[in-house]
Amino acid sequence: MDKGLIKASDNRTLPIDQIIHGNCLTVMPTFPDASIDTVFVDPPYNLRLSRDLWRPNRTRVEAVTDEWDQFNDYSDYDVFTRQWVAECRRVLKPGGTLWAIGTYHNIHRIGTILQDMDFWILNDIVWIKTNPMPNFHGVRFTNAHEILIWAQKQRNSKTPFNYLTAKSLNDGLQMRSDWLMPTCVGKERIKKSGKRAHPTQKPVGLLYRILISSTRPGDIVLDPFFGTGTTGLVADQLKRHWIGIEKDIAYVELAQERIRAGSHPDANPALYSLAEKRQQQRIPFGTLLENGLLHPGQELFFDNKDGPVATVHSDGSLLCGSLRGTIHTLGRQLLQAPCNGWVHWLYMDTKSGQLQSIDELRQSLLSNSLNPRAISIDD
Image (cartoon, rainbow, N blue to C red; front, side, top):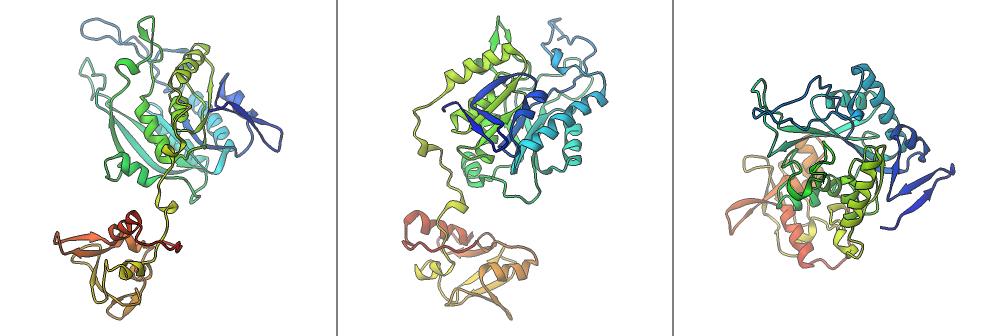
């Protein structure tokens, strides 16, 4: 991606695809309001380690003892957190989202502050580490996970979520909120002089899943605690713009080298397009009748075989007792809540003898181009 500057109406510029050497609390105020699509933050954990950690074989554990993770007390940490959260909120677009990752030491404090500052939490994700560090002395449970919070700046805003993309990434299964993947090991772990270059380097797979599911190509992703640049590396490879802020010059240099080496500038842009339902051609329910996939008089089941049963009318409406309506309006009456009829109505597949979603029939129309007309209706 080409590096450049985006100029806002207040003459402040946005340094896209660049690493800024500095403290995020002084750098972010130079950015324009409402200019960022997504923020990923991996802030200091505030581990407050009071002594070295040793393995049973008397080798020292490379724990987080760096200066950037040192705070006087929880109050000091909370002040720091409120400062960066406030700046993240200011630079995010109205529909923008923030991802924060942490451990039990800090993530719950961050979650409280996010809510106090009017962020709306969409999900909390549990990253379950398949290769966690053991608790060598057996005095507590092994810490085998970290928590991600995904929050939007404004509740009920149009926040990107690439549902089908995430589902495809997960072998066709709906992506859940428990993510199993290892920590950085082997070649992925960046080392310097034989030691880990950064104590909390995040795996590429984690950022890949975050960005491909919640951002679009061309979006601008900000990471105020850039470290060795995993966010920038993945954003660059997925054709998202990125901005990194890092106050340790050694990390800045490592990140620059890493992103430069991992860039794929000649990749075909079409490989990064998103095939989400909202972007697909929309077809009416009646098209299933026109193409013989359903027929008048056929029964449809609401949610399961023991649920309400409706009969398909020749005009594409459904009859259920004294009720009549479209797959959506009838569904809303039965559910007494918002309803996407494509999801809730099922038909009996004569070949398998199993109930199937009518959305499977719609998808077969789309994939086989049985509906050449550019019909557009609301889901």
